[in-house]
Image (cartoon, rainbow, N blue to C red):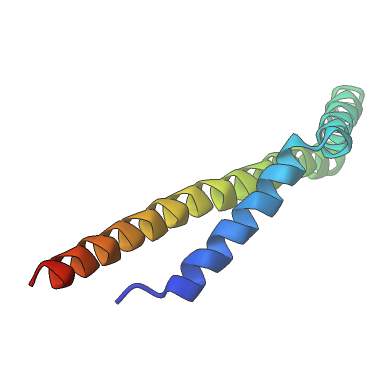
Length: 100
């Protein structure tokens, strides 16, 4: 059985996540962090294996955060679609009962 409450919650979360992804300050923060980590990574010495590994992980974390936000948006779009389908099904059932 489909939990409508959960679908509404996922839809609301998607709106927030999409707002964050489209927020200029957040975009700037992601870009700045990623660029500064890349620059720091490029400037490490050959002996600084640990430093490079940490910076590599930091670069990947920025990408993982963006991916997570996009996944929340995608889940919310799917939830909104399911809610529309539920509403359409309920409307058809109501019409059918009115006919009988």
